[in-house]
Image (cartoon, rainbow, N blue to C red; front, side, top):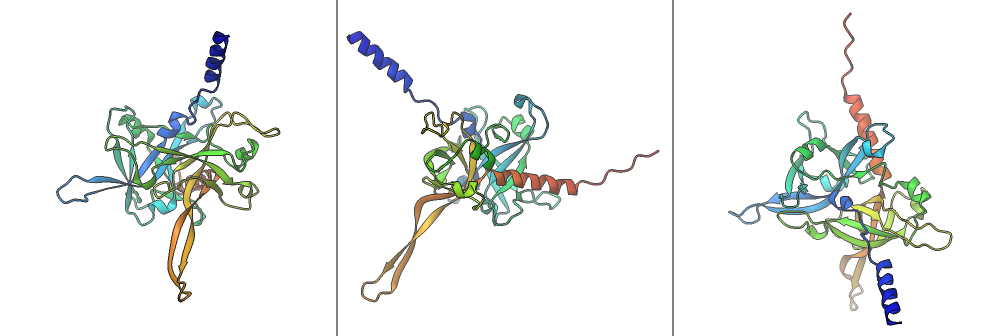
Length: 308
């Protein structure tokens, strides 16, 4: 009897053993954005993380085998992250864990004066992208992990298909409060939360959805990914895959007003973090990339006629 009970306990512990919730390449796709600054005269420059971003791969061929796809790789973040900057630095990990992290300055303008970054055509959509040279990253031993748009990304149509709804779990990946790791390597912070409201987005009556998660300065531009749900209510779908589902825009503040009991006048107004955050769907990333490609095609010189 004792042996049987022990065996049952062992089997139960195996069945409920925790599994990885986030694919490692999801984590490796996230980069820190900021600047290096000398805070103390005579000392070395220190890295200051201002925001988050991530690498996103768009297929550029019609290959039916996903493993053989060729991708254009883009860095994605919020439009407001690059606003009022002449340049911003991407801090990206090396492929080998023992090699140091690298700082790559990204100018807002190309040498020809054309904007290097491209923002969503709608100024109210807080998304900007820049095309990266993936071959350069590989040649310099840097991480080339990215979210492939055709495999691990869920736009609104996909979210409807998999029946995403309020209460579903999510993870927010990024570098809140400037916590980007060490001088040698980025270490992404993953925070769990849940979808607070999404039906209005899926009904196309809203441009974003809300999550209930701890968002702080530094999370802007970071990815939001879905969580596994191996069990589900009757009539709903369990989720055995995880997807990139959006981009953090900002937390929603609430205003706290202190009023004097003597005068009835407002003495102090402060804003606090409500615990809710606005997230932009990945559809806007795709729209931005499509608009970028259209703009690039217009800039291409007309082909010269063949000489006879």
